[in-house]
Amino acid sequence: MDYDADNKMHHLTQDIVFNAVEIGFAVVQEVADKTLATRPNLSLKDFTKVLEDYLIKQRDINQKNG
Image: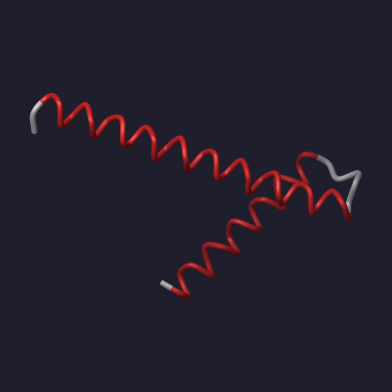
């Protein structure tokens, strides 16, 4: 590949990573909103466990459908 193609690929990759992080933040905010509505005094450690459980559940669903 030439320099222009490498540069374009680099920028596209950066855009993809940025969008993935943005989506990840949105998911965490949604999970936090729903979790804290039912468990307002949840510790950070316990919330981290909620996020881990969510990720495992979503990975399992994805593998079953993929």
